[in-house]
Structure formats: C-alpha cells, structure tokens
Amino acid sequence: MKIQANQIRPGMILDHQGKQWSVLKINILQPGKGGAFIQVEMRDIKGGNKTNERWRTQDSVEKLMVEEKDCSFLYAEGDTLHFMDSETYEQFTLPSEVLGDQAAYLQDGMLGVVKIIEGLHVGVAIPDSVTLAIVEADPVVKGQTASSSYKPALLENGVKIMVPPFIESGTRVVVNTADGTYVERAKD
Image (cartoon, rainbow, N blue to C red; front, side):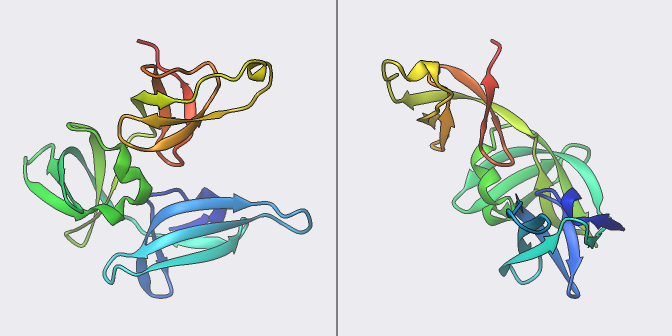
C-alpha cells in the first residue's frame, strides 16, 4: 500500500529497494530554503543492517501489509526481549534493536501489537506514552521558573529526558515513547 513519506511512523514495515525494512526513528526536517523532507532510520528485517533514507514529504513509499496480534511484554534478557501472544499464550523473542530506543520504555506486562510477515515476528508496536517516576532532577535555579526553559532529569528506567523546572525527584510523568519527550505530569 502506498503512503506519503510524512505518514511514516516508528514501527512501520516498508518495502524499499526489494527489502523489508522496520522503521526505527523518523525526523522531519524543514530547511530554510526548499521543501521539507523526512529522514528515516530503518533496519533490514532479514539482514539486520541499518540505513538512513531521506524522502521529500510528498514522496510515496510502499508500506507492507502485516498481520497484527495483541501481545504482552514478559521480560528482557540481555539484548533479547520476551513477549507472549495474548490469544495463544505462545512465547516469542525479538532482539532489542528491533524496537530501537523504544525498548527502554518496556514495562512488565505492557500490552503491545506484534507485527508478523510470512509467519516471522518482525516488530512490536508499544503504547504511545508511558508513566514513569523521576529518580533524579536538577534543582530549580532561582528566576529560571519564569522562562520556558527545561532541565535534565533521570527516569526510573535510566533514560534522561528534559522536563519543566517545576518537576522534582519522585514526581511521576508521562513520556512519549516515540521520541522520549516529556508530555505532562501524571495524574495519580
């Protein structure tokens, strides 16, 4: 199925140059002069090689139709992620590089959608956001709260993100899993 390049999202499976590619990251760039383009980091499903491709946002790309099934994350063992099919309770594994940076946001029992092409598990789509606790945050600098500046903070999963100055250690926040950005303070 053809889609426009600006509709590409992490986790999609694309057919490009005769190979099947799993999208890891996207970045839409808008230069000062000329049209916008999208830079896509992809991983070859069969070979495991990574590549970066650029398309103009109006270009069309081939998105593969994949079978999707609900699954839940069980645990990580080294660079291997263990999942379970929610219908058949069959367990399967995927290398953590399949999820890229999103693997850091996996939590025990987290629900996701596994993508299957020709009987082969090729990827997992996880929720768009997760709630995590801040374990370490820089103190607020006096006078800094008036501006819209952000400060670094460390999440309970070991990932560093930028948060607003009012966020303190121990606060639970919602984080976007696609790009690792702060969304809002969690409503507990």
